[in-house]
Each structure stands twice: as C-alpha cells, then as structure tokens.
Length: 242
Image 1 (cartoon, rainbow, N blue to C red):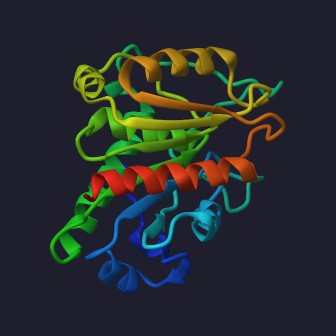
Image 2 (image 1 turned 45 degrees about the vertical axis):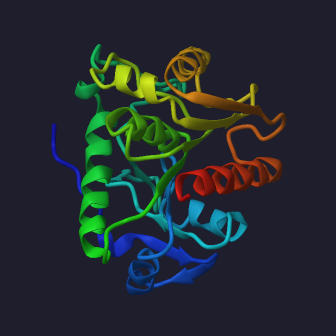
Image 3 (image 1 turned 90 degrees about the vertical axis):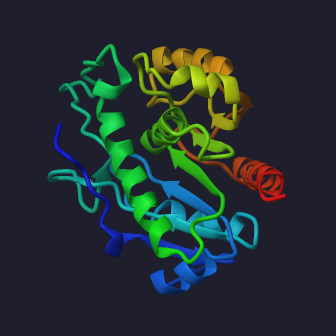
C-alpha cells in the first residue's frame, strides 16, 4: 500500500477554545493536553474544529486534513481511505481478513507518524492525547486504540465504527480496556447495520464502552452529544493527568 502523510501546513489549531497558529499550539502543548479531531469521508479540516469552542477549556485541539483528495464533483472533500460506491449509492465492500492489511491501518500509520513528529517538536514531549473522530474519522479513533493502546487514555467515536479484521494487538487493548465514547443515532442512514453490530461486539470486548443513543441526529453530531462528549473528555483527562 502507498504510504500516506499528513500535511502539517493544513492542520487547524485551537488553544483554550480559540483559533491558534501552529507555533502558538506548540507552545501551549508544553502544558496542555491535545484533543485530535478527525473528520469524516468527504469533509475537511475545517469541519470538526468548530467543536473546540464547546470542549473543555485548557486544551489544545488539532484538526488535520485527511490525506486523500476526492475527485470531482466533490469540492474540498478528503478521505482517510477510498470508498467505492455502486450506482445505487451502496458501498462496495472488500474487507481484508487482517486489520493490518486494511486501508484504515495505512491511514492510522500516517496519523501516528504525524503525532510522533509533533511529539518531537514539543518541548518535553506531548502530554495526554485524546482522539475524537466522526464517521470514517471514528474508525480512525478505534484504529488508534488498537495500534497503540497505551498511548491514548480514552477515545471518542461519533457515528463511526471499527475496521473489520483480526489484529495481533487486540488482546493488549482488551486487557487495558480504555474508555470509549460511542455516540450514534439508531436510524443513521449511512453506516450499515452490519458495521454497527460488529462495532458493538468489538467495543464491548476491547474497551470500557460508554454507548450513547441520540435519536434524530441522523448521520451527524447533535447538541446533547457535544455536551456529553465534553464531559467525557474532561472527566478522563482529569484522571489521566493526575
């Protein structure tokens, strides 16, 4: 598979809920935790950064652009990996039996490499990192937990899922069982029931799952969910940093 890279120049930053430059964020990361925001398929880095204003104070938020550019007619749309659609709008599935052979694994390697580079740039290294993602970005969250379960104290999966396939690191994750927030609408028109069922089983077996149902949000993030996410992050950051 082709190696993917995160463009550092396209990352959006906030510090204490306010827009910030990369230099300001780097200085703030010396004393503040990082919340990593990963957008969904077809979106861009300016999407989830809007959540920063409603997340806890005293944190740095980073919203990178996914590495793949979607072709026309999509405008300003990016993806962590390609999704092939049939003419009727359904998804063509070709899931590998092993997670490490998946596109999700390749995309997650890119994020981990970016975090490693960021860690080297911050004086004293990064403190706590909490990944938060929507839809395909939610799958990035579960993939990060699978690949480096000791690095992240918790994760937030909004209308997302887990990549299929077995993985050698899953037993270690199951032993650690980090808290995982999973918010969704049971009437979500985008994520297939098969993926939802698999995610429910996997999350219960590998994480301390906190599942939340929000009727009426469809494939999105609602106001009540944002408040619950903020409380979840604040609670687990307090535990991780003390």
